[in-house]
Length: 223
Image 1 (cartoon, helix red, strand yellow):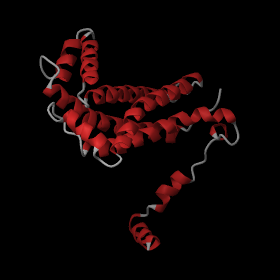
Image 2 (image 1 turned 90 degrees about the horizontal axis):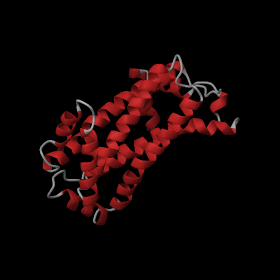
Image 3 (image 1 turned 30 degrees about the vertical axis):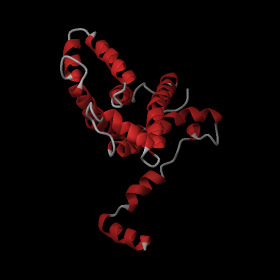
Image 4 (image 1 turned 90 degrees about the vertical axis):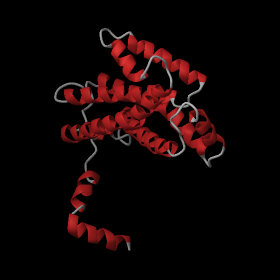
């Protein structure tokens, strides 16, 4: 039955060449762990993307139960942890994944730097990769406030003061993020919107560009 459905779609959209182009793409020998043990360092980028996908899926699950207001935010997280089936596991995956994805991205960045993969003709991809790094950090910072507990509250106050210390634009950035004179309901709403809508949209756009450039330029060779 699946084959019949696939053939019906393929006859109309000709999708076979699309996935065959991806599936038949040859992996360079120097990034194949079966040939070179050092090739494992080339896996950090793929691991980063894998964890990112887990973060997206687990985050979609969490948003079905999370309530982004100062009265119900903490209670909704507690309900998710104690009453929802597998809620504690999914939130744990999202919580620890936020740290792990930064570690993997840092290792990936080190590999790119020390193998000279940022050099011509891949300078633009290096810039896009750095932007992805900053977006990931932004996702971590904005997501930290969402449980609305004491640790999240005071950590966010520190984050906002760091933003305020930026020359010239600091006060504007702080006011934009804080949404008022104190860390309160507007801050939580803005952090939620940035975490769930704005930054993921930017991240997906950058990832598409990152993968397109990797595909066109290929994986850089060893030193």
